[in-house]
Amino acid sequence: YVTFCAPIVLGILFNCVVFGCLVKVIFAKQETITRVEDKSSLEKRKRQLRSSLAVFILLGLGWVFGFVLLLNDSKHAETHLVFRILFIIFNAPQGIMIFILYALFNKQLR
Image (cartoon, rainbow, N blue to C red; front, side):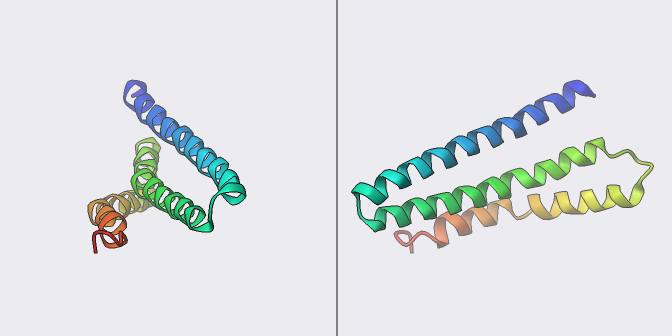
């Protein structure tokens, strides 16, 4: 059981750390942009941050529900069902959401 759950926990934690580093880099670049460069570059960074946050939530949140589903024992059938539904809701539309985020919202591709 631990050998199955440990890689999942490590993957989720690693993704959170990488996302935190990404946010830190984007905000650090925003400081230098506000001093040196124009505001259009600042807007680009904000869009990148929003896209990163959307992908982080889209790809990570469903698997957090999946992990909680593994921890939930079968004694609590209602809670188990809720986490199954949340897992399906957050993982099923991943492909279409990535298409929307990166293709439809991209002005160059339109």
